[in-house]
Length: 553
Image 1 (spheres, rainbow, N blue to C red):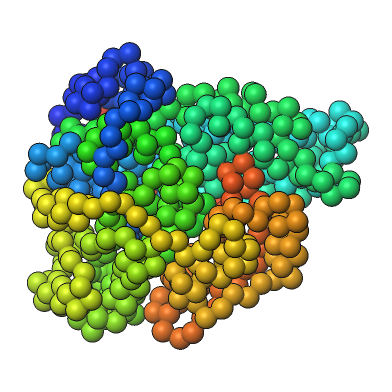
Image 2: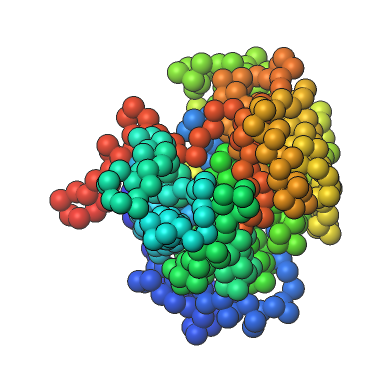
């Protein structure tokens, strides 16, 4: 059966029952139908003295274009922990419509390790991403309106872009203001996908509504004739934008197929943004459960690095353990095996590709100093020989492996990982950082590039060099860096899967995200508005004669 067919056969409980399971009383539950709800932020006053649970971060190796099941493992582990008698819940990211209609289809797990109702979560959900899109575009409208009506702030350069939550390459570069009206100014502009919007990052990094408004106020929308920054506060947009986001900042409660609680909230991509769900959802979950399973986007060089270097600093929470998800097919892919024959046994390719996995494991274990376990998301095409080969490779490095079969078996297939995680998290959380927050921006970039990616050095464009100097003079030195890089390779070249030869990271541009509180570093060919593949998933999505949604996988 397909994922959507399995999800439709699930017996869902009213979301009020799921809330009671984690001691959320009815007064804090704002239901969106029977099976979805928002949690009122006032609950945090009630639970603030609760002891924090253990935090487990799920990350992965560099993926194949189809993904390696990181969300499936996260959901399976949540169910597995509950199966062995632990009070556990998930804290995950919201799917973007971009990949839902693009390459991957649905993004709510798979098989018998899913969050439900999967169709609702993948399509519109509770409207958070739409609210973020509207808030982003309200600011754009107010900027251009200000310029039209006399430009009192003497804005010379606008750097704020509009956004839409779809993959639409035609919008990457556009000309705006072509109406010919007297005071309308023509401008070369472009759209970002919503999950790359600074508003998405702000929602995910805000601690409460007041912090949200304060961060929005700091957004740099452009520069005036003297080169000074112009902010959203200068445009007087922060109040209305906060109003649009007043519900979007509340975390969403749903359930797994096995009726265990999951908060799904916020969804920045990790290859172009910081890749983590909201601080509010994570910290709320930690007060409600003994074990919280969260995830970070794409490979550990992107999502986990940003979770550890950006989110832990902002939130003041540290994972007790990290699960690094891998698949046999991804290991063979990184060993040079053609994806068309990836289901064939390929021991030599696996051995060669295991270097990618070992690099990620080493980063977590030796750079950040956090306990790590490898979870193999098992496919039916994986052979016993391949699994035993990988197990021996990991044993030589002193790293434990767990075989995850939650896609086929649900929580039963995750018991081994759950039991090992309980032992692995029996410690006080601690972390070592690859850079000090007081380091220069260039030192931070170079620390990530050399220590985490394994690069030889960093090469900067002339524009990037000048901007880094400018940003530090503007007071944006003591902030984290958020590196935008391909998810497919440790390098900044998506085709360089093996990374066997020395490589450099090329920084072509840098951007200030003053509301989010970090500097974005653009490398390689990563773009903030993806395009659809030749055969997008949207072609297979529809509604049948019974009104049932089909085609989301």
